[in-house]
Image 1: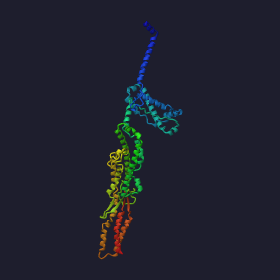
Image 2: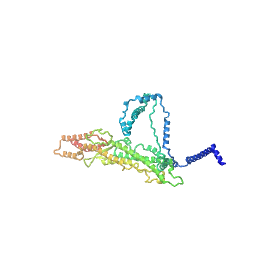
Image 3: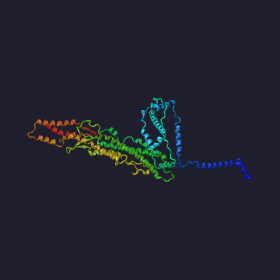
Length: 518
């Protein structure tokens, strides 16, 4: 009976309908299983970001997305009929052939020779001729298009050619990512940097804002020195240097460091993640790394102000690098630079020499002390931890990094200063040779000559005494005609002491002669 029913179902088609339903349900069941396996797992909200992975799309799918995005951008960029006609005119007729370089025939010849077999060109000569014409036409069109694009970059040219809208060709950058997971490693590296690199944390960035008001000016200010009066004596220069360095260091210690410490007290919540939480073991490594970064930032700021001050002084001192050699007789305003310090010429009472005060060695030490003291101003500046943690206060090892005198840049500056001083000492030595002609007044030669004159037998006549009086008056007048100071580039030479000594020694001789004359 069952067999008969099956035959009836086959003949009526009912069997095939039921079989199709069973197969359809089976396929649907398989598709539901696949959909469940490929369904994206929803991660819990507290799941760490760096554990989420993301597989890149297929490169073809990425290109389709980028192209569709570009098409949507340019969809509404249409030209008017008038603009289109004008552009076509310039592309076809308006730009003549002599406006661009002729077609490079040798390129086409090489192309046929190296890329196409000769028998094919002969066999399909008609097609080859058409291709030649097409290549030449494309070259001509491209050359005219480039010229037109360049001209119409200028809005004034658009107005002149009566073109209201012209879209320059744009070549979009379509960056396709490789079809490999990337987010997982990126997130891990970001977390690693967050725990080892702190320069982008808000408190450290705020250090630069605090430093702005303290970085103005210089440790040793030439402008302030000019206001106080230049040229300046060696004692005054040393006092000004000590005062400037002392005041700047006091400002850093009593204001800058205190303000930085207050910043870290007030912004504790911004770097709480590097500090140990209550009940957790102290992560000394992480805390040290954070404050090392703070120290590096503050050390960099100190280094900036030191070299800014050094360069400021060197820029000024370089104006005197040409020296003051006197190849001719000294004249007033011979050197245009206003002198830096005062050098005195003082006669040595025990000899006929005229000495400089300060001496060359003292001048050199004084000039070299300026960059050295600038460097020492920020020496052993306490780190911020000394102000935040009482147990570390006074720790000599907890200091910001110093600028050392032994550094190459500083040593180069010291050598330049030494050379500049050497270039500026020949001038004073040459200038004082003028007074060498009057050494006989100092060494006692003139006094002996006068004694010999008085011991002459018979006693000299009054006319002879008159000659001696005239001689000493002439010497005195010659000193009056010479200026007490000479501007010799780096230094102001003060010769008033030498003139005064010569006058003091020569005046008794004159008075002695005059008394006998009377």
